[in-house]
Length: 317
Image 1 (tube, rainbow, N blue to C red):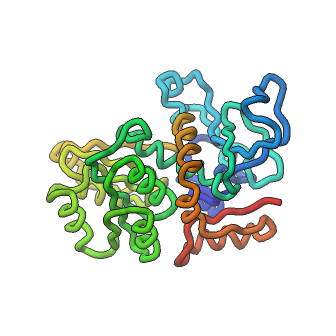
Image 2: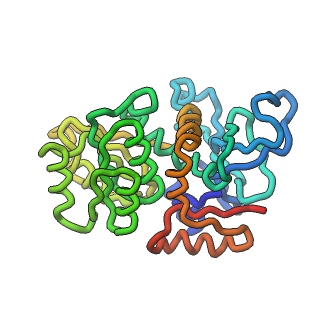
């Protein structure tokens, strides 16, 4: 089970950064996970998901009938429940999930398979600007603000699908990782020349697309400032905070701002295929594998986010 930024919000009691109604506590968390199928319920397709299969699980449970679901936006379902957020999740030995949410993933270590979920979040963020496995991004310049696991996943998927990428983060080790994974630029967010470098890299205009994965409210203003006129800003990072900025810049530059929530089922399926075809690369994003007995230490490690920390995964027996 991978520890996500939203898990840390939950751990800290910062539920304002989470979505949907819930009784919140107590809660067994965990929505980034892989598992072994122990049993298949009546009416489920045993041939599609045989007992004993290694699987990744799309953690959303949607109603299928609300306006969002009817318009193909099930990841924004009005009555959505997320495993590990709105009901108990994967930090347990057994978990009951819907058949449609289960995807077989063969030949992949459990810790790498668990990264399907954060990668699916990246896939959906790119889908919001019409980039995907069947929608290449050749010629697109895309900047990612934040070099954590989601930011790295966005940059990696965008690069695989043809975009030129830049990653902005204050931490040197994250910038170095981004370059190892194929980013053309890796810039220090705390240095003034970063904005100038991004504009120069974007042909003097700025990136075509800026994706904010930080969850820091003030970064939205930076994203709107950096993006080229007529460009797109995608907001992925969660926060309960607010940060006003001059709204006049939106019509002036004709910028489109898009929110990106979790991942749709098709995004998750695409993420499974990405992991299966890029196992060694994805492995570089899993920095720590911690046994279940040391789960408390795993959360401390993820909280501290010291140098060399990327995705922290808890391995259950």
